Length: 597
Image 1 (cartoon, rainbow, N blue to C red):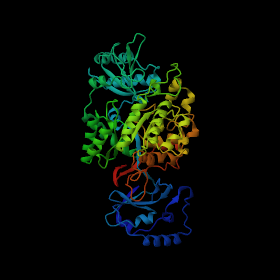
Image 2 (cartoon, one colour; image 1 turned 90 degrees about the vertical axis):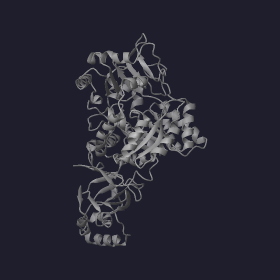
Image 3 (tube, helix red, strand yellow; image 1 turned 90 degrees about the horizontal axis):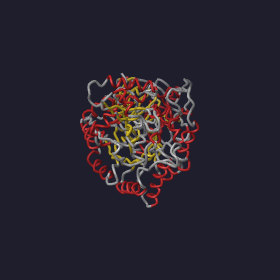
Image 4 (tube, rainbow, N blue to C red; image 1 turned 45 degrees about the vertical axis):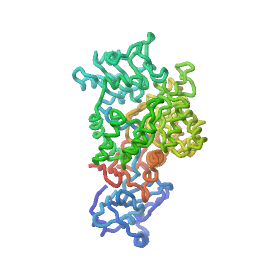
C-alpha cells in the first residue's frame, strides 16, 4: 500500500491492461496479458473521456475491491467525496476523479472490503475486562492455577479483586466453589466472571460481604439463582445475574475507568478491520453513563467507528422501548446510533439456564426456564413494532428460539410487519425452525467462532447431547432457506473462544475449526460457508440487521465510504491463515482511522 502525491497520477499511464477491466466477476476475471494492451488502452481512454467529470477528495487505485453488492462485483478503483462513494470501477475510471489536492491511495493489488460490522458485542464491558490476565486462555487446571496466581500478584494489598473469563468446562455442573478461590486468595473479596458472562465465581469473603446465606432467595429459581450444597448453602457460583445487586455494591468501576479502557481498545479494534459494532448491553457502569460517555467522545471527535447501541429489558415493569426512543432523540448522531431493544429469552446450556426442546441429560424432565413469558414477549415486540424499532433477542436453546419465532409470527399475523427483529446466538435452533427466519424476516445473528469442537463442545454435550451440539449453527441451511445472517463475536462473552476479531469469525465459518487448527476435526462441516458468504454476513448482513443497508454493507455509489484494506487476500490464501490477518488501512466516512505503521 502506498499513499502518493496527486501529480504522479495526473501524468502517469496505466501500469497494467487489467486495470481497465471494471466490474468483472471474480471467477471470470481474466489474467493480465500484454497481448491486446494497446487496444484496451484505447478503449479505456475513450470510456474515461466519455464519463462525466467527478472530483474526489480520496481515490483508491490498483486494488482488488470486493464490493459485496447484489452481484458480487469486483472493481479496481474507487472515488470518495465528502465521506461518500462517488465512483466504483477500473483504476483508469478512478484516476479520472483525481484533481489537485486529491489524496491518492495506491493499494498495490491489496484486497479492499466494505467495513466489517460486528452485529453483537459488548465493547465497553469487554474493554474494562481486558485486564491483561487472559482467563479465557486458561483452559486446563494448570493454566487456571497459574492465572489465579498471576491475578494475585497483580493485585497487592487487601482490597477487592475483580476479573473475568474462567472456562466452564473446568468445573462440574454446579460450577466453581468459594473454597477454590479461598485457597488462592485467603480472606480477600474476589469476583471472577465466567467466559460466557452468565455466571460469576465468588470467594467466601465476598459472599459474607454481600450477605449471601442459605436464607438468600433466588431471584428466579431455575433461571437466576445461586448454586447450593445439599444443605442449601450457596457454594460460590451465581447464575444469570442472581448476584447483580451484590456485585454493584462490592465493585463499582467508574465511568472514567470504562472510558480509559475503551480508548485503549479502540486502536486494536480498528486494526482488526472493524468499522462498526452493535453493543447488545450498554453499561459504563450503567446505561445512562455509557451513552453520556460515547456521546461525549463523538462530540469531541474521539469516536472513530460506528457505535450502534441498545437498551435492555430490566423487568416486566420496565419500558425499554420508551427509553430507546428518548435516547434516539438525544443521541442519534452520525456515529452513535441507538438502534434496538435487547431482550433475553433464556440463558446458556453450560449453566442449565438455556431453554431446551428436550430435557437436560443430567436433569430428568428439566428443559430450562424461559426468561420471558409469552405475554411479556408479545408485549415487548408489539410496543417495539408500533414505535418503529426492532428487538434483538438472546435465545440459545431450541425452545427459546422457537418461542421468539412464535412471538414474531403472532405480531406478523396482527399486521405488525415493519421491523427486522433479530434472534441472537441461536446456537441450538431446531431444523424445523430454520425456514421460519426468512418467512418472518427475522435476522439470524450468531457468534460463528463458537462453531468448533473446542472444550465447550464436550462440556455442553454432557448436558444437551452430542448430537444436538454437532447440529448447532446450521448456517448453510439458513442461507439456503433465504435467511439474512449476521455475525457478531459477543465479545467478551464466549462459549470458549473470546475475541472481537472479525477475521477469526470468517476463518471459523469456513473451516468449522478453531483458528489455525487444521489438526482438529471439523464441527458439522456440511454447514461450512464460503469466504464470500462469511464476509457478506459481516458486511451487508450486519447492516441489514441494523437497518442501514442503504448506507453501509457494500461499496456502491452513494454509500458511506467505510472500508478496510487487508494485509492478505482472504479469498485466495490458505483458510487456516485468515484469522492471522489484519487491516493495513481502515476508513470510516472516507476518513482514515487506522493505518499500519
